[in-house]
Length: 346
Image (cartoon, rainbow, N blue to C red):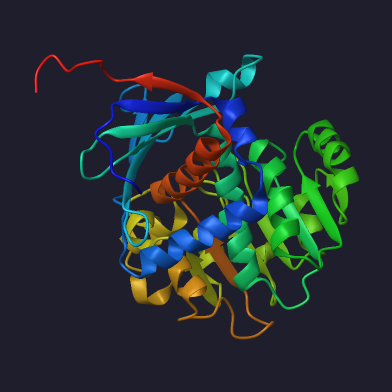
């Protein structure tokens, strides 16, 4: 990027982010792959996200939380960014406000001046599902035509886009939710634009038995996938906190994670619990960077049982946010704000 001493900041509200191309899943998946390639090549600094759950000492029983997700992307980019990611369970009962609300700040790493502040909520929804799409691209069995998606919330919405983009031969999607009406409404909204048939259902286990890929995108804190769900030739992609129990993860022939160093710090995740118990170490897993760089395969044959797990990287938000910033800048989208006219102290 062109380094700056200008205190001007481009502010992109959610509507601006949409105009800049945020809802383009093909672009988002490409950005996700590029980010993990740079991570694997040592061009990204991405410390584990820092989690603050509230009220104090609530552990996993939070009412709301904030995550701080800083990153630096080198290589051809040389940009820094941070996402302030937040969720509130109370919001699910308040009309007109999202369950999760995120903001991304992009900065010049040489002068440390911020040059863009943008809504990150839609970016989060898109890149979360795009990560699952990349897992599916590299780890789904050959000729996958049926997928079960568990969860018809916001991530379920973007997951429909990600799975159909990553698996072009997809013919059937089972869209599962305990609230059948919710799944039916989402299916009705997206069916006219997708070639794959969307079948709403509340029976995720039965749907999974008919699918080559199961993707879970729920807010549960209690695992619902156990060994009775498992069979050869299945890929399970867990995007939530704790959706597959420890025995089912350990029963997999291959275990893939998005980023090991961060995953083991998040104690509610199955991988972290297995690591803490001494049952799994880094050499036992395949990282997303291995997949996109081609140094390891997502599966060696179509009979293997594969489990994938993701926690998400701040670098993804920085990368996608920067691409949207460039699009917005080119198209004249957004508002300019300033940190100062003249700094009081230098």
